[in-house]
Image: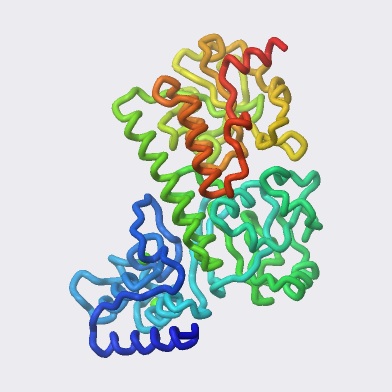
Length: 437
Ligand SMILES: [Ca+2]
Ligand SMILES: [Ca+2]
């Protein structure tokens, strides 16, 4: 049977169901992700996903039809994501959209976009998308790689020096910038890329300024995934959104579930254990605000913050207070690599990080052998795993994180990375050796 015939059968089946008023199980063709059961803290942030799980499938259609039929317990209030076209009511327009998604037909869908400050808003996407222009913010390529959508990137807005890791992203090294910097796009360059590469969406994190409406008028969809989210919930939402946008959900589901399993291991091992209080650093001279995505990695890894910084919503400059802290157990420095000194290269020169040590080498945490450097550029699930090693060295070993990393690279990055050959985590011992050198 050819694809068109299969689609026709599916449409006829839908009609038959509406007539018979029975639930139906849809076959989504070659994609089996809607049939496998997953258990993940998080959801696909797309309207039409009425049951707020990880996919849009017949279960969502079932809920929408029950709301339309006024079945007891089925209301828009109970299922806010049932309103697929975001017009405030649930009717056949919503079921039509969900049927089109299930049958992989073009339709407009409404997604939840995340702004740079983590606030969200709803926007329309002409689904499914085929190719994207991307902002050059470093967290986006890693998001694409984890979600399995890197191949859909046809161009990027870049700032000099372009910092995409050459080991992790060789395919992104030859792009000419689509705009004046990593967050902005020139209309003419985008128009050219629409012609040459068929891009139909822009994925970004920050404001596109006045250009955003122009791009929408050109027919482009604007997508803002929560690219730095350190929680399973947030990470999953970003992963699933990217998988959904390009109608390639399987890898995004697998990677989300993988992260959930790591989080479950951390939670079960740290249950009942006094939480480690740590200072989150990314640079040598300031502490990240506990509310920031950078710092929240520590919370996902089971830690908390010392009282001196606990209530701060902005980053905090280093001062004498750091050297007189009595209630801080550890320092975790999340340190970014560079294109010329990548954490993912076997030849990574870790002495580049010795400068940051000067800031904290007179602290009690350093004296107590409780400072660590974790590669900021790691995929989020691995960053969380290594942070757990730093926070709870008696519960989690570096070998545990390394074995997890190998499993992750094998499953999601094609298996050509050897976790044992790259040095993405520095213990106090290693840091002290660096400080002496
Ligand atoms: Ca669903
Ligand atoms: Ca509606």
